Image (cartoon, rainbow, N blue to C red; front, side, top):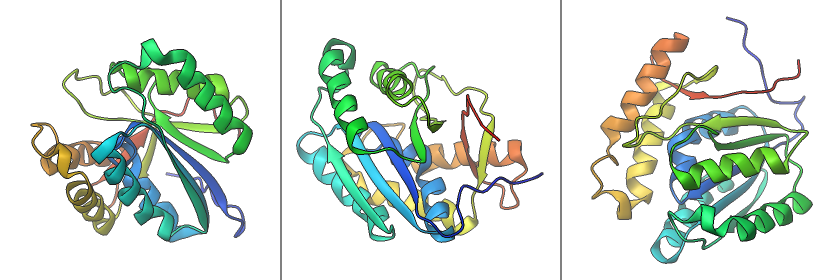
Length: 215
């Protein structure tokens, strides 16, 4: 299958990562980011909307792992109330508008529009509402609702990247380990399924929803 490359003749690729909660970006696209960082220079803007207290520490430490390998980067952490994003819509919208004035990325990684978690869904909707002339890829987060969809964009992962993602999640988000779904087996299963669907050489991949592409 013909592969499409995002890098531009050595020029840094500016990537904006948006997550409702501290671990969302890593669950959805850590593998993709690790692969991108190995293939060329990247500028990263890492924004998490709900990162209070201990979760802010986890989000910051995790993000710094990626930023250390990037050409440049910035971390933006907010403290919106987990589970109540619809009720805070106006303030979150203002936060997005402020971010838009500061960055114009080449690629945006964000939540799926069909995600059944209300916080995730709000972030996905505001992403499309805020950035109208950008490449947007929506990542997936496994959860109780069973809302994994039918993605149309795949990133094959090396065995090293697959293991690196699993290790990173378990190391940096200790506050989530007590949750029954926050297990390496869950994240590995999703990567394995997506690897089958795109016939990844290693057997593992991450998947995204690409609604608009200009070729």
